[in-house]
Amino acid sequence: MTIYAVKRDSETNERLIKRFKKQVQNSRIIQEVRTRKYHTATPKKRITRIKAIMREQFREKRAKEQFYA
Image (cartoon, rainbow, N blue to C red):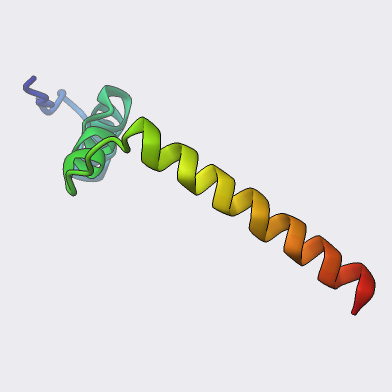
């Protein structure tokens, strides 16, 4: 996916740069690069379930402490 901007007849350099930046933003290349920067493996179903259980236990404990402290 190549993005380029050719300077128009009476276009200033600043306007050309602004137009190019807008094209890059609209193509979402920057977002894609940022997401690919660090590879993260998708969590396994078992690990996701264990984390959810731990999170729920922590929330219950915190709720009890909030009312009985």
